[in-house]
Image (cartoon, rainbow, N blue to C red; front, side, top):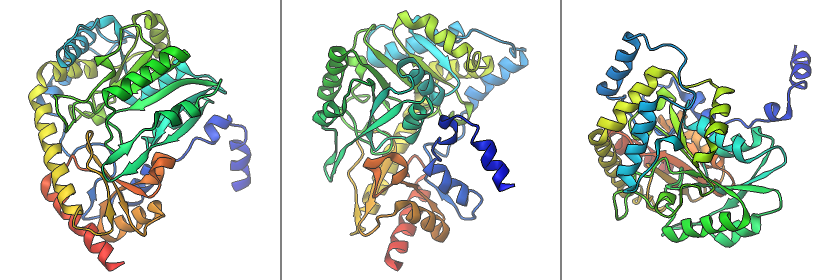
Length: 394
């Protein structure tokens, strides 16, 4: 039977056969049903979607909105996305630039499809959420890793490294800020330099600013390409309803693109999902219009969780990390631990604390583990205690 399975697999495309296994999911699958679990491994909080959002989806279903719909997204949602962005960034946005997708992950896949073909290259600063590089690889292109530098004062992206990584095959630069997993935030100087580089070299930028509202510096949100870019600049913004409004399981996101790409985006959506369910879109409309108070509570909760893990882990002599400037993750290194995959598997087995191994986040993540602190305080305090006790016992 094994030989038959190998023979069948050999008929697959290389992109399918060699799609990488998620190092995060490996640890999750190893302990998903474990008792006394504190799951800090994936990028979501522990709050369910608020009732006012769920009620909007239910009302849509009760109204019979279960048919095919607009490929680009229902007008009400695209208008709500434009209004939301206008409010957050204090500048006008046209609804025609927004395209609703079946998750932030699909937004990334469609963005990669727009900018890269087989044999092309996309620059990806690491550590980075592994799905971006995987989306590039599945496309038949190559994700070129540019490792960032860790210091106790924070992570640093060397633009000279980015420039050195460019080649005639480079088609795009992926920039995730605030960054999953490190919490690094690109300042306006970095954003401007990357935008100038894209303009001068004829490159695209795929901008993942999903965690932009989860920011611990000065100002209401993290610095953004929206602060400096023109509507027709070569930027594809990928985003999701998942993080801000506790809607990870809804699988709904969006792309913000130059208006001239409208028909292209519609075509790509048509040939992938043929549109997002209307009831999910109705829920998203209500989240955008009425969810600001819930989002503010989420941010406050993450800020408190950040303080708990920073204070707690700072008492561990072997721990090394910098305070995250944004997002809701702590990227933690432990002196003497080089195989973080093995450590993550052993830690969850021994203590019930689930962390994501840094090896899942590219070459820049080796030697680190990711901890999600968008959780209830008592769980975070207990997790820190268990990690500390486990290290003392080694």
